[in-house]
Image 1 (cartoon, rainbow, N blue to C red):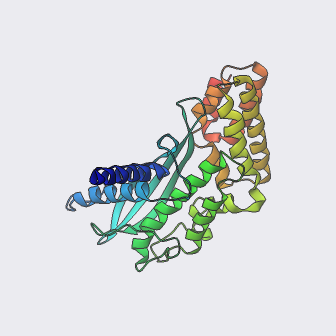
Image 2: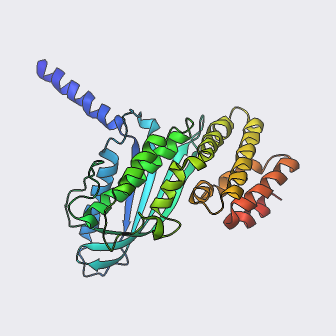
Image 3: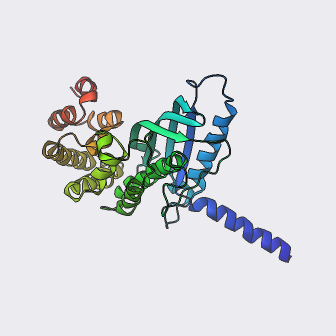
Length: 306
């Protein structure tokens, strides 16, 4: 009897630990560009290890129920082998945020990291320590540091949508990674001079007090807008329009920021759906704002919201 009780308690602990994790991640590796003489099994091993790293690690002090986990995907495309075991790659990071009283997942982030170099030897541990980001080999450390940075950024954005500036602790953790990032001549993306669309500038926009209003914009778009659509689509639509008006003002005052692009990316279909069946007046206002904020989707907005 005592043995059965022990097994039962261990089972509860096991499933409780699973439910405690915050992220539900799928990492996919595309190695089609890598020379066929390389044993592709190594990339399967890497893919499995990255999935385990992101899904099994406890990233916050909060407990997430299974239906509260943040759905994410990472597409790691290997472009070339720089030297033995060192890879040049690009990374696409995506995450969704469930809308209240629905099964719909709103795009929270769809970010492309175009310049990512790392070292991986098959079965090497993928570890991350907030207090020692770089590790012994910078190129090995860059692998876990980059994935941890995006995990914290996703968490921060998700928390921002549920409470004003709720994501700040996780943006600060991402900032800590930047401040202690691995350094090597092959590593880019962590410094302000590495370009205008990189890990540094994305985080800078999220922690810069000058841009505090952007956190209110994330919060109001989701909580006063999308989460209210089922209860009152008219009121929710008005709130989304007010939020987009604030975002447009922010964009005019702070041109060419990474954060506006991040907010608008992948929301074209979602925003068309919100404003397609409304009054001509609201539709015209939305069209004017959206074509200015989202230039790449301007034609689509004009066709759908005319």
